[in-house]
Every structure is written in structure tokens, then in C-alpha cells.
Image 1 (cartoon, rainbow, N blue to C red):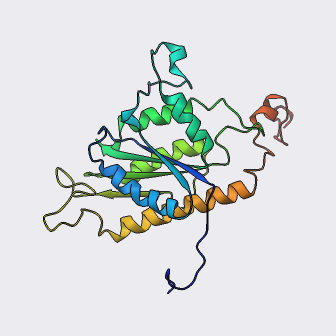
Image 2: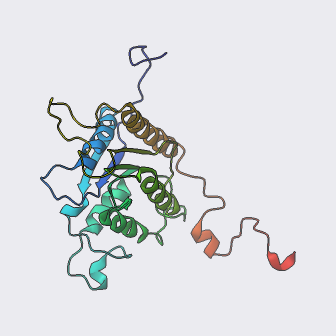
Image 3: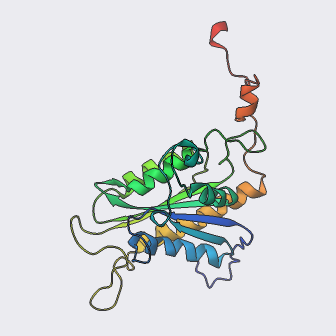
Length: 247
């Protein structure tokens, strides 16, 4: 069995960027259980040379809506344009969310909607703007729903153009109902969830798979633009799509 001591060369992903958006409902500087698990992924990436920038969405005045800048649609202020600029500059996006009523947080839904606001934008190949980037999700809570929350979030990211690598989610839930959450300190000084091999393994796989995927995409110059350029489609190119009228 291989280990870190087997002289296996660790990849160096220096120069790559990642943005982490924590969709907790708890404002800073209070402790966030979701951020505690996201930090596992963040530290692995930083150790591999990735530059990571983290936002706790509730700390920012991000307006709800499905336009890139909601100040153009009735809101007095909107910090999303500043954050979205960082998202556009990064090759990796990680969304973290707690579970409430079996689903993602309201902050998470708002962030997904604001990402979707850019669905009409294209890159220099005419593809949707998030093509060539990798996305993943971290979920925490005290009730069932990790896979459900991961499923809906990863679908949303994939739909708008993010590449979803294998094992693109990591999560932890305690016993159903009130109780300790991930990262809470126990009486013996240890932390809740830190001893979960399943969670720590998935968080590690998530981190590396996101980096591997983003690096491969970057090395390849993104996704080939044959058959998926929105601009080319709008200009009349059909990429051998059969016309039903001539069947």
C-alpha cells in the first residue's frame, strides 16, 4: 500500500486559483462548522500551491436576483460583482453549505442564482463563461441530506458550465436532531467529526480531484469548442445536428 512516504512526487499546482464560498447563516467572526470542514480542503490546496480566497456570503451585501449586478435592477447596493470577478479569475470553485430542513441554506440558493446570472456570458471561444473551470461542494449538518444537497448543488454548477470531477463532494452529519456539529469541541478536547475517516477521505479526494481536473483543463486550453459554442450556434452553425424537417 502506498503512502506519502513512498517518494511519490506530489503535484505542484502553483499559479492556480480557487474561490471558496461558505454559505453558512452565521456571520463572522462566529465559528462556522461548514467553514471548519472547508478548511480541510483549503489547506490541502494551499499546500499544493493553489492560491485560495474565501468568502462567507452572509458577511457581504449580496442582493438576491438573477442578474450580474442587481443595482441595475432596483437594489441600492450589491457586492456580488466584486465577488464574481474573483470567481471568474479562479480555475476552481468550492461551495460550502449547511443543511436546513434537509436542503441547502438560503445563502447557498442565492449564490447559485447569482452564478446563474452569468449564464448569458461567453468566453473567448463563444462557450458559456464557466467552461474550463472545476466545481465542488462541502456539506455539514445535524440531519439527513448531505447527498441531496450535494446533488442539487453539483447539478447547478454543471448546468452553468463547471466541470464536475469524480468524488466532487465531502460532508459530515451528526445524529439526527439537536446535537454537536462538525468541529465542536468535546469534553476531552478533541473535535467532533475529525475522527471520521469517511469525511476526511472524501475531503482529501475532493481537493485533489478538483485540482487535477482544473489543471488538466488549463493545460488543454479548456474544453474543445466544437459542438458547444453558443456564439457559433447563434450564428447558424449546427454541428451536424439532424434537421427533423428532413427526416
